[in-house]
Length: 239
Image (cartoon, rainbow, N blue to C red; front, side, top):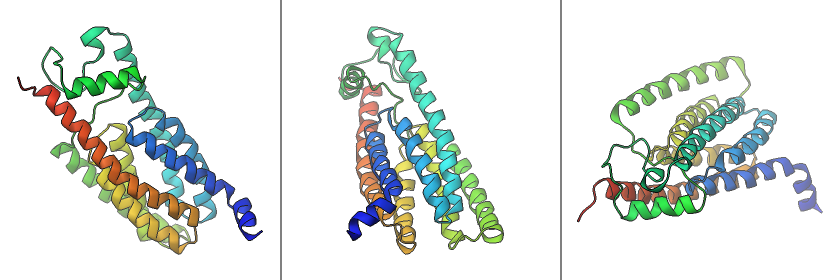
């Protein structure tokens, strides 16, 4: 009876945790459907974090909604361009400079497989130094701005950690939308900190969600690294 009552009173949070796990699975697979699932998850957690007084995290979910729409557009735009081509043109890798002819190899096979599955997508890329410096500066500005607002104008119980999680998540989500490999390292940091903080606030389904996120972040790191190697072997084929 107690378990039934708990499930009944926390069903919204549980639903958000389930959709969140599906979201990360799709993210690892680089499947475009991660974006609509992410929109649903964010909408649920706007409510969950508001009722738990995690105001920065609540605002972050609004940001997730916006970036999910943008990411969906970016990924769909690339898929649309590819679907208009035929043969080698239809499977050229976007946003990377390479040879005019698409050589047979691991990258070719992986791209062809995803075309057959209907999951055409942006290619995974590495973080450039200039972009990294800009993002680091933005991260610091976001952190101190959020910390100031939360500590002065809200009753957030952990303004420092709330600001850290939120600012780092903002950067990681943008990097995901652009399919930058290093965004997984940011998620590892976010998910570790979030698991501890939400545990102290009694958000147990959310703690489980973020622990799953943490494990899946390491899986995503491995899978995206394999994609990077596939792209590299395609751009630098060996006879």
